[in-house]
Image (tube, rainbow over all chains, first blue to last red; front, top):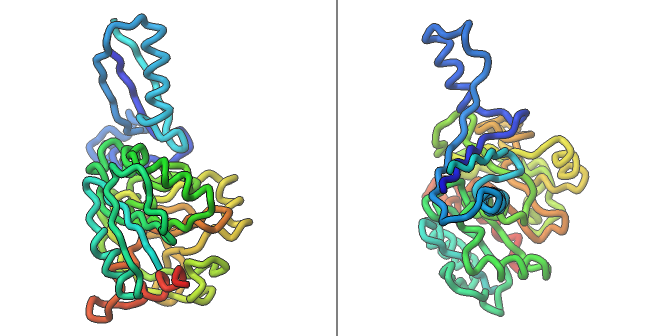
Length: 81
Length: 223
C-alpha cells in the first residue's frame, strides 16, 4: 500500500516561493490564466500491509509528529491501494 | 561556569561556540546527540548553529527527536537556561520550547552578512549587559530565518516582553531582511529561561573578525 502526503503552507501564511513562481509565470505570458500559486512538497511512502483505515491513522500520526509543522503547514493524505 | 554545547550530525558552529564561552572563562563540554543525559553540572545549554541532519524535511525537524532532546525538555522545564543560535533556534521552535515557526527567507536566498540588531527588551539574563534600544552589529547566516507567528501569538510575545531582538539598519530603523514577522531576530519564552536568535553572537567575539559585540550578549549568562 502506498501513501501520498502533500504538505504546504496554510492559506493565510505568505508563500514566498509560490509568489515568486506566480510572478515568473506572469512574465512568461500566463498572466490571465494563473490566479494563485502555492508550493509544497510531496512525500511518497510504501507501507507494510495495513488496511486503508489503519494506514490513514498511522500516516496522520506521522504528519502531526514530524512530516508537517502544523504551526504553518497543512497536510493531505491519500492512500493508494 | 559550566556550559554544555549540543552537537548533531551537521552541526558546524559547536567549536566557535566553545571558543566564545571559553574566552569568557567558562568550562565548555560538547555533547553528542546520542547521549541520553546532559551533564549534571550544566549551568547553560547552548544549541549551536549548523545544518542538523542536513536540514532535511525542515530545519530542526529531525533534530528535535534526537536522544538528548528528552533531557533538554526536562532541563527547560526545571528552569535550566537554554540558548539556541540559528539552527539551534529552529530546533527550539520545532521542539515547542519557543513559539512560532521558521519559513524560507522571503528573499529566497541564503543571507550571509553583518547586520545591525536592536535590543527590544533587556529584562532577561541574555541581554542584561545591553541597553534597551542599543544597536549592535552581529553576523547572520541563514536560509530559513523568516520567523512566523500568528497575530494572537505576536500579541502575546509583545505583552510578555518576549521579543528580544529586531533587525534594523545602522541608525536603528527596524527593517526586514528575511520577511520575519515584526522584524523579529530573537525571542525568549515566557519564563525567560529559553532564548533563540538567528544571528551568530559567537562569530562576533573579536574586533579582528569585524566586531566584538557578541561578547556583550553572551556575558549576560555569566555569574
